[in-house]
Image (cartoon, helix red, strand yellow):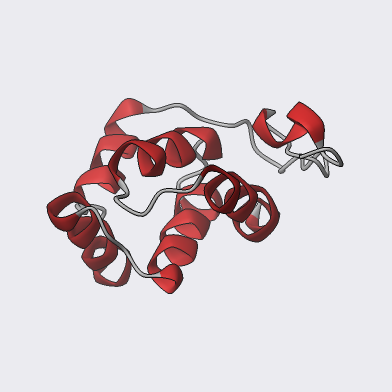
Length: 107
């Protein structure tokens, strides 16, 4: 984007979000999230659908993103990269901006 430049790829995003915690890159938590094994059925169903089909509806993408950030405290870029690698309808602008403008504020 001409407006945001490369800030959409930085940990704090264009708004420079800084949560009260340190961002984590815990691979065990990330694997549980990717595999739909967090123990939270509402999140897990979306992630299992994504893993099995390459698709997840918009609400599922946002809710699982909010969970990754706000509940697991994981670096949101891990989630954005995962979505990029598995979504059949992946579109760069929609993916990265959704993470930075819709999910990152959950921090």
